[in-house]
Image (cartoon, rainbow, N blue to C red; front, top):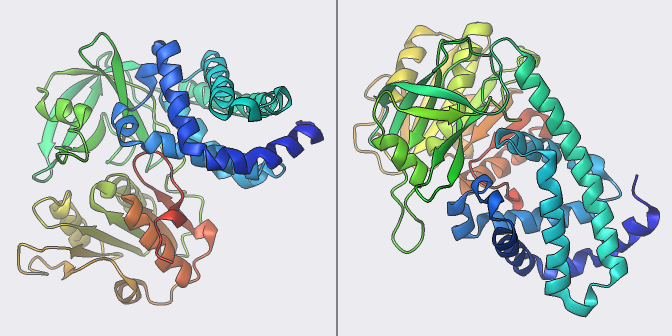
Length: 411
């Protein structure tokens, strides 16, 4: 356990680190990549360029400091980080590298304000958190390797099939090169793909598994990121995948993730799946699994996106709705290109809002799973909170570094 003196110092210095948070984390990443370039493959360079990882780390440091005497409040955040680290194959030997550069950055950014006592306290608190993560990640590695068909590290997979889902989304069917069995996974989880970058290094990306478990293949559905000039770069891995040929080989890490459909929850409550854009991918796995495992459970799916041209799995949802009386669906488009509701599925123009939820769900008690970009999630979180949906019945994920939803919500 942390000493009371360390807790006191960390809480007292938290406001200072918050004030200098973004400067500190930018300095930290620059320093670490300069002194320890071997860790570069573990980081998303696009998120680095956009400043997302720096902001996420600053937020995480402040949250840890604020709750250092009540770490139970960070249980969900710790699990998310552990799952993400395990998906990237981060091991115990990487933690000293981070710790050394973080403490050095505190000294270099804060100068004389970073006394030996303060740096020692932050060193102790970092070591304490590192031990928690190392132990949890070791459990995840053991579990992934011990299940039938499971493995540890990276396994070579062949792109056995490519299927276009929309003008910007393609599904990739992956089969193990060794022809061995595959593990089951929890609907909603993701895998990590490792690819070469052309400069002698590799880079990794996480992609949700977009089909139900227990197939002879794994499927990911990837949106091609073309980038917006001057604001976001072209997605290196997404374009590499879209341009790849059937038969290409990828390094794949075992399924991970804390966002998944919990079949242990009561089936008495309806299941509500709400997607923003490419956020539909993990929800497709949940949808197909729920229809198989709980065929009588009421399920509602809402998919909001720009238009029908970019919408993935439109025909799949239409087919499933026709086949399952317990499934209802609605598509909401910002800029629809076709007559609304022309294929028997409810559709409307605009953004997902309270009246749509009222129409689809009414006042029924339900479990909600939602996934999409930050602004979409902030809006959903606000709408569901106004409906008094309990925290434990809200499950969400978005792609990229974890951020505080409150920072995106209107006042």
